[in-house]
Amino acid sequence: MIRQAIASTPAWQVAGEAESGAEALGKLDLHPDVVIMDVVMPGMNGLVVTRQIKSLTRDTLVILTTAYQNHEFRTRSLEAGADGFMLKDDLDVETLRRIVNRIQVSNQEEES
Image (cartoon, rainbow, N blue to C red; front, side, top):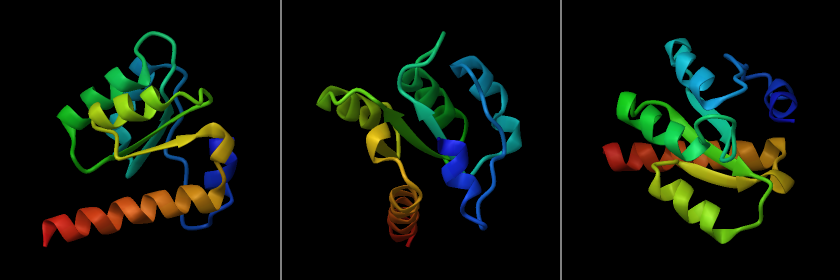
């Protein structure tokens, strides 16, 4: 689903995909601009992976997603350092584009 959303936007490309948190960390050498991952994954969950990504690089945006409509997931995701959070039910190209743009604008404002 995420791959299709990204592939349908000509300015974006998929740098890599991972089945687990450990595999996602192993792909950071691809220097992705944005990592979109599930909170619930085999091995390391998305919260642990987010903390590790943010400890290794501040340049990569992390957006966590889940199918569980539990407010605690959003809170815990942001506490872990995620730049954004969205429910899988809300995942579409426009929503994803708005989240990424909002984060980028916010980061630019903080830098100035």
